[in-house]
Length: 363
Ligand code: SF4
Ligand code: SF4
Ligand code: FES
Image 1 (cartoon, helix red, strand yellow):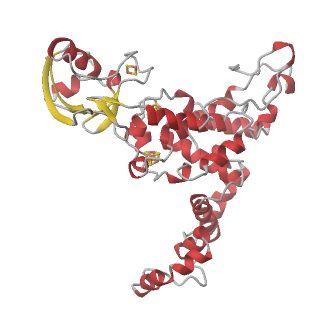
Image 2 (cartoon, protein in one colour; image 1 turned 90 degrees about the vertical axis):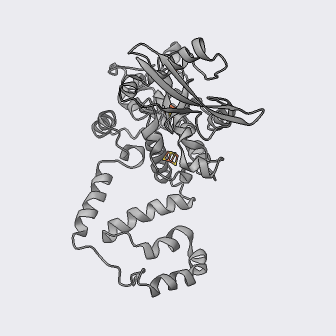
Image 3 (cartoon, protein in one colour; image 1 turned 30 degrees about the horizontal axis):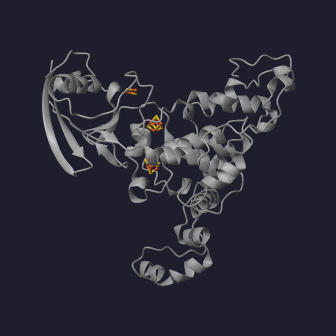
């Protein structure tokens, strides 16, 4: 088949930028990476891009196709070519370009390292050189986060990083959840505390582009939501974002409405609210602020309260409240059955239940 590509070429040393067009003959099963290989082998050896595994494992070949991040080795070109479309290929966003489609990954790895991406064991070594076994249900809560291949596609599309390059970003935060949610880790509180700092979890704008573009189904935004829920569960709520989220819950539970008039004092404090009095009066003058007293209570407020009670009685506080499909539902059932709250203290299941071989045991 004939495949056309327009590729943004760029040289960081000279600052030169050029949209180069190529048309190649490629087999029908060709991926974008295969087509780039043909361009480089047969048409233009100066084209620069990264690759290694060619099978969606190494995370090297992230780039943009028509403005959205993809893994080149996962992107089949048959339909594109059949439609007669000539896609524009460019380097990933939010990272400095070195040459053509190659970006400098150093800022990415700096953030990755800053979340301490290693297990910090919170248990004693079991005697006799035995392994620490953990039930599969307990690992399911971080199953998706464990699938990350560090490709950077989520970072490329992150709105919050675009406005604040110091924001930790979806990849580093998904990695952080990988260890916050690991029952063997003994540094959960310290980790959550650090992640609640400036440029941490509450800077995410919830645009969900990271979930949309991740080629491995990690769903980094869901991981960030889990970190927020775990923080509130552990009373780490000093950030305005945490207080904002808490007020949403409280307001919905008590009146069935989001009482926006009280949002500012509840999240930013009385002093900040007083400073915004003029703005509030202007809004009120234009009928944008309902009279706060007495608070308006929804007719069917019992339904909102019942939902709140369900979350509480099913023990879905924290990450367990962020449902990620069947794995997470299995985890919730496991918790209901065993009364396991997921802390590190019972990580050594063989010692707690010596005769029980955990199903799908993981070492
Ligand atoms: S949801 Fe948050 S982390 Fe994900 S891309 Fe949007 S701003 Fe970035
Ligand atoms: S979360 Fe997904 S998109 Fe982001 S680095 Fe990991 S695998 Fe790539
Ligand atoms: S070449 Fe390894 S993920 Fe594409």
